[in-house]
Length: 142
Image (cartoon, rainbow, N blue to C red):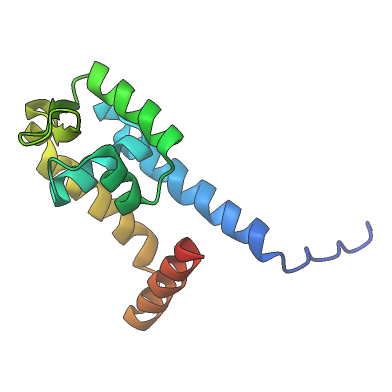
């Protein structure tokens, strides 16, 4: 009989990373028919929250750094998911808008995200869900 394996130490960072991988992977598969990545979907949801933001405003909303968001926006513009237009009062400022292509599948994409969220959270009580969300929000702010 092989010796009993020692349990893994409680490593919060490792557990959080594995939970992220699982949730991220599941949602990535959900988005495959739309040819979108998870972060691209987040950008669209940010624009549906408030269309016409600057890249800086969108980055602050989504807690994304400028370098990451810049590449994402370029790919999304090339593939027709977003449009960039000059600000009406200051032409030096570019604003980001969801495209007609994106708006045509808005309800389907939001439903897909809600379904993925529900699939993850449904095994937990409402109180646990609220605590989990509070903990995640606090981690994102730190």
